[in-house]
Length: 219
Image 1 (tube, rainbow, N blue to C red):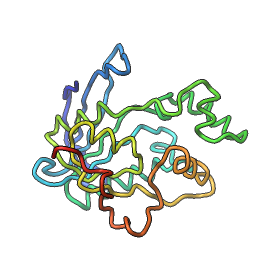
Image 2: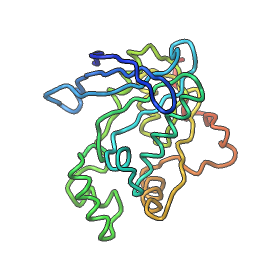
Image 3: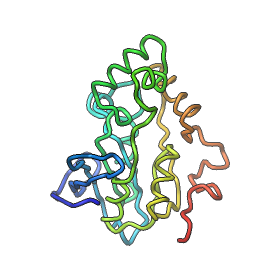
Image 4: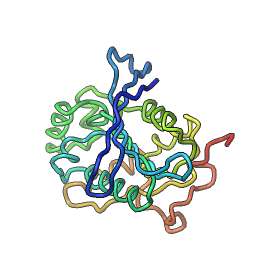
């Protein structure tokens, strides 16, 4: 479902990654043209237990460091964590605004400025709560020969997608980053309405997998 189209050395502030471009068709989305995904790869991800982050594009956060969301800080947390660990992959997928696109996300921001939360704003504009799926990012991990991961995420949908793709999640790593007055309500909405695993209880603070939650069956 995905094909590698380019690979280059990619020096960054954190480490010297390999930057690999993939193209893929997601039949569930009925796309007419391939979707582009990027994978920043560090170390031997087949023989180690790599840290993996699936990160959806957020121009306002990733590029302009918006304080309305946690995307910029989660991106930097992931790259720093992978560099410190010595092996890992950050899959960067073009699903801006939970799949509705940049302009529609800004329209949703207008409604949030009027009092709606992020979910209510999407629904008011006629969009689903979340248009994303993670079929192609999981295919990228499989194309890289990865079978087991430490998954850096708070999103239960990403956990389910990685498991459904047959990849074992040995450990979930928290993607919590500090909030601020501008992001407080957004993060609370993700926890309360989307089930994001955040502010982890002390018994899970070491990042280990809760029984029955993140271990893939049959591995």
